[in-house]
Image (cartoon, rainbow, N blue to C red; front, side, top):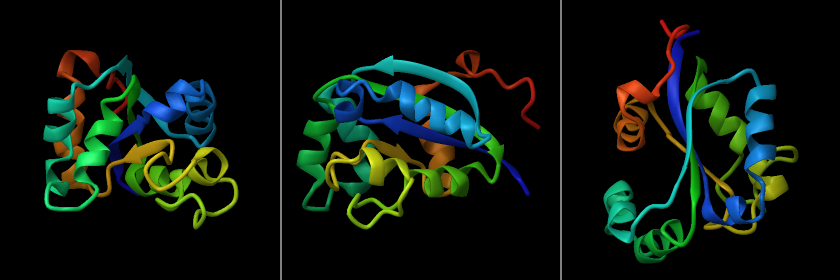
Length: 144
């Protein structure tokens, strides 16, 4: 198994419903390590930059509006195969299609308000992590 880092975002609807603690509890119970954590609010322009990869998709405008509509909790996770483990813990994008016990099945509302975001690959994680965290904000004493 390879040690990896990945980004997680607790989306505005989940933060607004006071679910950050529940989600962080599930992350820690899964064995993933939290190396950085903060509560922020994206501007619309920041959301557009972060989700630029989806610019041509029909949901881009509503996604950017939604992600800048309230505070989000951003978290840097690390551990063996962290990307796939976090994605498994999140569940399918559509809460109706997600497996029982996953965050999205248990806490998601719909495809957009599905409680959490996660990097989908090492290259994506490598681009997403520095969007939110500087090197000084990351506790990496055990990361090798």
